[in-house]
Structures are given as C-alpha cells and as structure tokens.
Image 1 (cartoon, rainbow, N blue to C red):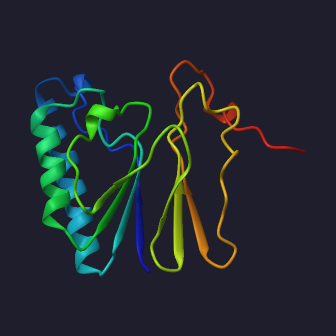
Image 2: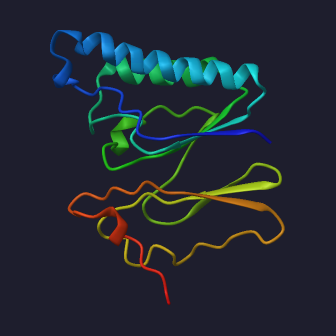
Length: 165
C-alpha cells in the first residue's frame, strides 16, 4: 500500500506578508495540493493522510472549502484521512464524502485499510494529558498513528505528550 502524508496546508491563509501577491500565493498552495493528489493518483497511491491544518482558520472561505471538497470528489479511488489541527474547526469539513474519513476529539478512531490500520485523535487542551488512554494498536498489522501537535493555549507543543519513564 502506498500512502502520502500531508500537514499544514493552510488553505484560506491571508498571506498578508505577500501583500499584492497574496491571492496568487493562495492559488499556488491549492495548485500544489492538486498536483500532489493528481500525482498520487497516477502513481497508484490509495491513501492521503491529512494530518491537520488543511485550512488556516476555523471558518475557511467558501471558495477554499469548495475547491477542497471538489478535489476529494475528483479522486474517488483515493481515501483521504483528515484529522483536524489547531487551525481547523469542525466547520472546516461539513460535507460528507465516502472517501473523506475523519477523526474526533473524544476518542481514538481507527480505519483498517487492509494490512494497515490508521488511528487518530484530534488534540485539545482538555484531552492531551490522557491522550494515550484508549489507543490500542493491532499487533498483526502495520499501525500508523495520526496526530497534529498544536493545541490552543499551549506554548510548547513538545510538552503535550508525556511518556512513562
């Protein structure tokens, strides 16, 4: 199985630092995403992991939402696993598509892709302390765990997950 991992795409970013070229830069970012997905399809890649911040703000523009959903619709043979990040919001993905699989904040969600199991859980400041609870990996399969490291209200993402020593 071939998989592509993407994160921090940030569609709908204002791109203020680019001043008059901001719109051009936003379109370049979308076209890069489009080219990656098209290339994945050509290469027979069946899964694209979107590990947070597909959008740059909780309320992305309608144009960016439509472009994203249309891209997913255009490639029904690819499963898109979308785990929201600290810039995304539930409103970021409000269209249900059979090949767009999502995760939640409340519990670990797993998708069995035939020999590979992808587990994910969206981080919040309220669930990070006990994040590992409920995560059960499949001993007889390959396991991929999806997370996105930024949590609102924290200053250091490296302090989010503590391990037993």
